[in-house]
Image (cartoon, rainbow, N blue to C red; front, top):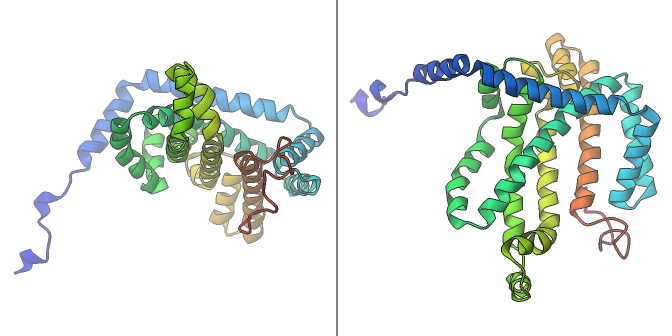
Length: 300
């Protein structure tokens, strides 16, 4: 009766064939993969170059202005600028710039891919049904799994980190772009078409502006998921604050790990508050200066 409690071995999936196929593809497509790797590394280097050419006082001023513009609070702007300055006081300013360059590059690529896909599936029930299982799989797959093909195809470094981060972080912006456009009042869409708007005019002048808060919420979530990959991608050679945390773990240096981890938290909080303020409609155009809300969300 043991066969009732032991699953038959001949049903076991042979993963060796998958490994052989991927390795064979990596060898045969080496030139093409090198072009992608070079392009991604150049893009990250360009973003980093731009960040490094911003003097640190101006950088802090820009942080304060962005937070003030998003939250309409001078106190918040000064507070978050001071938090970012604390990263410099910890001696991790350059590492913070490296991390920020990888995150921003990954998010920009994710948005370029995700927003058009979200727009596409918002107007097609068939595309939505076909893509939903893929998005569910991407969102629930353990993040470490993404490191394996990225490492095998692109080697260690920023390119692999960007690829893994984009795959992991692109899902929210696809889902929320589609959701935002689908939730636009049908009467508004019908009114636009009644006045002679074409399909594309209706999409870009009515639906997308109406869906902007939801799309920006997707941008916020994509950014936060990219930040969540900072330490994970350090395992495949991405430098920055994540590498500092990983080195502290390997050497069991509590203080070093705590400081580097706190810097990651500070960077994530600042990016979250800026994009969250944009998604909630806070800004100079709000009649009461807080996007129609009397106070911040209790959870924040």
